[in-house]
Image (cartoon, rainbow, N blue to C red; front, side):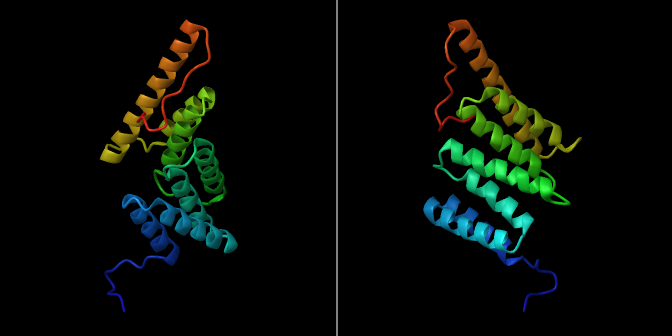
Length: 168
C-alpha cells in the first residue's frame, strides 16, 4: 500500500507518463501504440481530461506528418473546450503546437492566429522557465511568419515553409 504522502496517480495518467518515457527513449512506435490505447480507453469512458492530454501527446510524436499533428492538436483543443476546468498551461501548449503544425503546412494565417492565442493564454505574470520558453517560441514563430511573408511578397511567389526538422 502506498504511503499517505505518495501521490496516487490515476492509471491513465501513469500510462501517458509511460508513453512520454518511451518517446524520450526514442521508442516512438511503442509510445504511439500506448497513446492510441489510452485514447481508446479515455474515449470509451468519456474521460475528457485524459483524452485531451493524450491527443496532445499524439500530436507531439515525431515523426508524425504535420497534417496528423494538426489533427491531434485540434482534437486536444476541442476536448479542452468541452472540459469544465483545464489545467494551467494546457491551452498555451496546445495552441503553440497547433501553430507550429499550421506553419509547416503553409497555413500562415491560421499559424499566426494560433500563436496569438498561445500568447493570450499565458498566465499573466508567470516568470517561470516554462513561460519564458513559450514566450521565446511564440516570438520565434511570429518572426518566421513575418520572414516568410516578406520573402513571398518580395519574390511574388508561393511562400516556402521551413524543413520539418528545423526548430522554430
